[in-house]
Image (cartoon, rainbow, N blue to C red; front, side, top):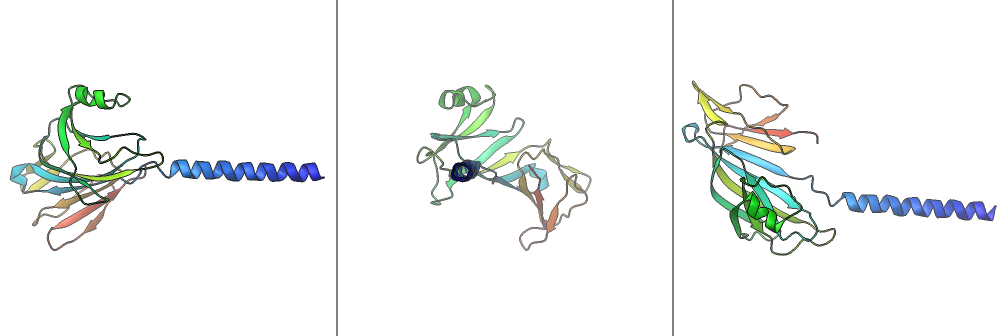
Length: 194
């Protein structure tokens, strides 16, 4: 009877330890990315992007954010969200990014914003940052008559799109939450299950 009791407690302790390890490992995976698209006057074909992301790769000294093909990026800046301080960055090709991060898959000719993190990511650590940029892309943001069209694949689970003053949502291909504001006509909130 004592052996059965001891075996039960050893099994119970092992399960508690394994469960705890699973929780600890899972909590450091970034699932909290967010992107806000602020549509600028339609005739400019421009939209401002505010992108929050958490870098979690152990030892990472850089974070790379791809500039979408077909888009012209301008007015880039990067902020450390823990301190509010700006971070150094530069635009590099995928071939250049591969040198700094050989384990990642980069399109060799694609362009990336290479963010210099203030410190490498520690074991079970993270680095929260915001990348702000303006894109010009007449294939994904344009007018049709008196309506504007923003047609862009959104790869992040949490997104919002801010419409310019004077416009309202007519149709959308995903479930959304529509909010009204003082500085903008409408903000469309999108949260997809990942």
